Length: 179
Image (cartoon, rainbow, N blue to C red):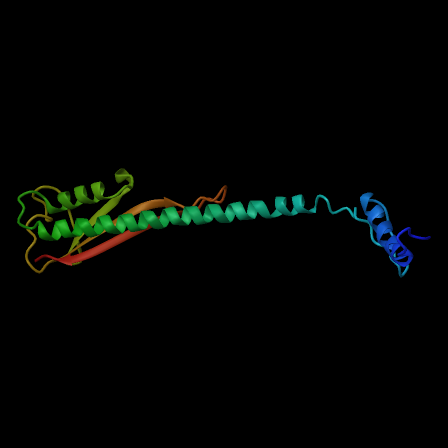
């Protein structure tokens, strides 16, 4: 085959590439390479592989993401409870000369200092390691200097990830001596 511009050799060398290009337009076609090897079919049954992999991996990723969110919420609640208990023990320790109950004042501070549901917070007061009762005129009033006051609070939490429900109990405790 002669090329009008005199480059007959180049035209013949381009023919195998043109056959490959023509064969690749039809995705089910097979083309022969110059060495006689047959190229594999482009359509080898892998069209849905990405969708299947996505369907298998996505639930695991969503579960992991939900677990991270639930753990973050529980950690935030624990920090919030610890901060509120710290404020409450300060009020209790510095309120020994108050006529009303320092334990009641500490309870009010803990309930208002946190974003948690105050009806679910359980608070216990200790003076020198023994449990004291709250209420006007109770043993919580009239704390003497040097008494070690401790406030302990618990709050329920849930680490429910889809149908795998796990409950937990957050606990915060702070101690401070009465000045």
